[in-house]
Amino acid sequence: MNETSQKKVPCKLQAFGVTEDFAVVRATCDGAYQDVTIDRALCLAGNVLLDVVHCTSEEDATFDLPLHFRGALTDLPEGEAVDAIGEQGPYTLLKNTKRYPERLDTATLNTGDATRIALRLLDASAAFYGEGFGPNMPERLPMILRRQQGRDAWFITAYHLLENDSPAKTTDAVIQDTGATVSLPGFSLRVGDETRVAVQGEDGEFAVFSVDKGGAKEAEGVL
Image 1 (spheres, rainbow, N blue to C red):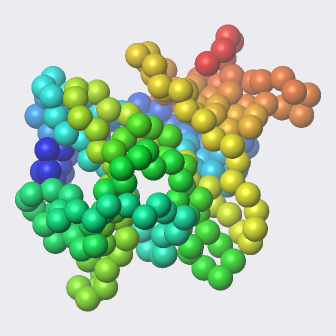
Image 2 (image 1 turned 90 degrees about the vertical axis):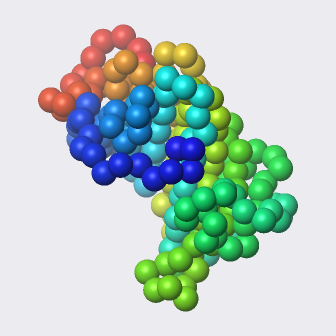
């Protein structure tokens, strides 16, 4: 936040549940930055990992979510070269920095001869590209950085783990004042006051689960 690194502080577990169809973990942290709460939920559904980050601040702030990768990023637009993404700290060490003038929705990370990760970026962040140091100083690794400004920011990402020519699933997100819902065919994750999951069965009907620290339990109603 505001180009400064977060403090190393503990988080508070809010939800953890595993079923045959999904695994969810959610935690919050209010000590990484002063007067800021970070709420993050991760959900694995089949071959798709959903990552939902919600940041709230008592004052206007600049929120950055950097995604660092091992592998080659492809399917990116050309972008516009910029001198730097930020003015202090590690930002000044990035090379080949670019800004994407339009919303960045997709990218592909090639991870092997027949494997790749298809990224779906499902929020309205400004997006940048840069190359930072890897485990060895001469090595440079690609990074996508997403940025939002204000007192409330949602960063929603879907990672589709794919083999050969298999396609990514259709992925959508709806962000409201009361929370965010991320949907795949036959599956939805709701992150709000509660953590909820809806799974479509073979009969076409949806089963709804409420997930808290005690696990995932079937619930009545809708997401």
